[in-house]
Image (tube, rainbow, N blue to C red; front, top):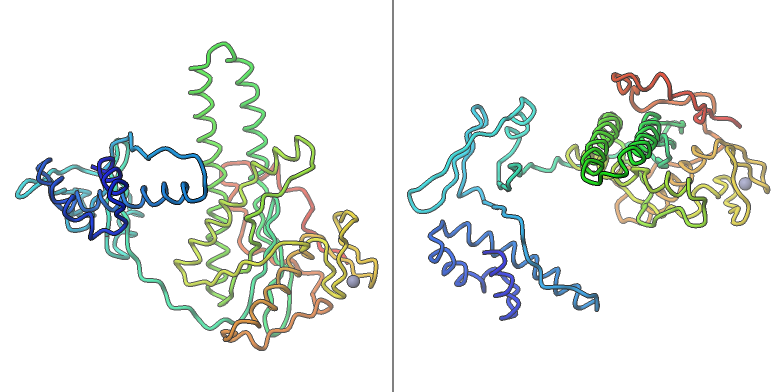
Amino acid sequence: MVNRGIRHALENDFTAKGSMAKFAQSLAGEYHINGAHARTAMGVSLSLAKGYRRKLRKGKKSKVPYVFKPFLRADDATFHITPETGLVRLSLRNGEWASFDVKLSNYHVEFMGQGKIKQLILNDRKAVFAVEKEIPEQYQLTSILALDTNERSLDGVSLTSECVVPVSAPYPDVSVIQHRYFTRRRKLAKKKCNDRRVWRKLASKEGRRERNRVSQRLHLMSKGLVELAARERSAIILEDLSLPKGGGRGKRMRRRLSSWPYREIHRQIEYKAEERGVPIIKVDPRYTSKTCPRCGDIKRRSRVGQVFECGKCGWRLDRQINAGLNICKTALVQLSKQAEMRGLGGLRLDPDALANDTMILLYAPDNAGAHGVSGRSGSTGQLNVSR
Ligand SMILES: [Zn+2]
């Protein structure tokens, strides 16, 4: 139905759901199914056709989309789930229902109880339930948490009306795990180089394990971070990392950067923040690691070492905290341009007031080592603040 819908929409230049209603009805009659299924299918068709048109407009090469894998998207009028038993009933056609069981954990049941179950997406492997939740009301901000994303931690400053302190949310295990799996895959590739089928199977298994282990640690970090921000009524400031870093570096460095899961880190923080009503502000990351927060001098040419040193005014600070400080500064400028400061009018950033001897950890990373990795990894000493 989706494939026929795409062609129908393109042939007749239809872009609105209303114009597809008649076609949906005829499809439902032809296949003897619930009309609502045909209507949601036409919704999918329209969005695929929209993407195709956009590509054509931009002059990109594109084929008319075709869906190969069977799936079903059902809206809440056509299915019903009992979370306690996991029984799903799905309407096929007038008076006829299909039913199946899904395995639900306590977490699933609790999550489903928090909102209205709006949509079911079913394919040959899994069932996805979309739950509609109310967006919590945004609170009056009292502080901001500006964080620079680094390979092993998020570092930056927490700014309240009383003080500014360096903070850090470390995830040292992540790069260790990634390196371990990288060497393992290399070894495996050598060993199984004469059997592609076995190699592909083993490699995908290893890749899955790596992703799971990395994202588990990131989830712990992002959860702790967002909970703290919600408790302290802070806004979280992150860099807008839509531009990839990593031109002009060595091969090894590029590999490390491209496997660096910053997008996943930001994605997790963003969706968790949205759930909790924590505002996220994104700032331009240019020169954040090369600017002096005190006098504003930018070291365009020279490299910045572990410690940032300003040639003009003699400011010295750990480079990662320094970047966080600059992100905080940019965010304050950006916020002051907005009509309402949302209660942040009293915040001033004075780099000299930075308490230099206390580093506050934003969550307890010890829990992350439950599977025995942290002992070998955490000793990088990158997080010391020195001035
Ligand atoms: Zn300076």
